[in-house]
Length: 432
Image 1 (tube, rainbow, N blue to C red):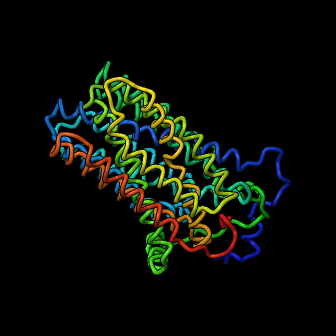
Image 2 (cartoon, rainbow, N blue to C red):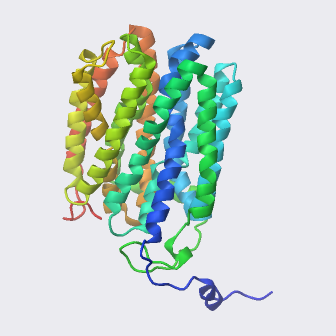
Image 3 (spheres, helix red, strand yellow):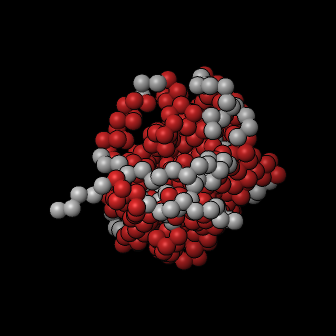
């Protein structure tokens, strides 16, 4: 057998070439953006399906919310392993399989007749699929393909989820009201399937695959695939868990997930419906959040390149908490100016926390930051899962969501204080 030498391996590496006029990194970022939109289609469903599923199957809101909480928890817990798997098998393969799992879960849910099937199809399959395309996917792409403009690109990719919400939420709400919840679930299936060819044909795992340097950086050889993805993810968790910033980031991001995905995304539509607002009107308000989320997240990425991310997080959480405390007094059968103001503000603040959180992970954990952020994201989704479930239980127990809004507002105030406690590793504001 002929032994492969380092010279042979080097001979097969792409020769570095002159940077193109439009750097390939921006094409990869665009494909990532579209992919995240397709994967985000499922996130538009839960809020508009709680009432229809309750009416058709007589399942309690707590039971339905539990299935949603499984999705959110697996979304987060899968993320760090997905980031490690991307290092082992490549971004394209992992994301293509993830999209297929989302499509399978949403399609199979059309045929469900028992709540355990809801938990299996929505909870497990879709949770694993969306978790493999979580924000750790964005962090991996950004870290590999960009040196300059990392904060801005992080903001743009983070906003992809909001863009998916903007596209699919009003559409799904309209389909549910006009044709029922099953056609809406099929729509999500198609959205996931359509994106797969874009990923397979246009996505590349590393700049060296096409003989380029990262945007704004120097050419580096593509690292060898790292085996033992699960062991590596766990090892990085163990190492990070010995540091204070990791736990503070996990705590703040858990509250972020509780106050966004767990609370507003899951329960805003049924809460507004409790006050007499039409489901389509409430869903449209959530879509408007998506519009301003794009602006807020990209703006937050810009700010993160220039200001201390700790202070940005403190401001974001403090203002979010105040708005949640005021929300119960704003809910009404029709859309009034104070509600519009809340929607605009909450949209700007929705996931503006992501760019500074990723910047702090990068500052403290360097090359392992994508996987560390995957674990921080796991805390985000665990927080979201708890509030998604407890919100439904509280609605069943108290007949309203008021106690949930107030409790979440208090948690956001605590997150603001936690953000200020995080110590910087060095004097650079963003660590980028």
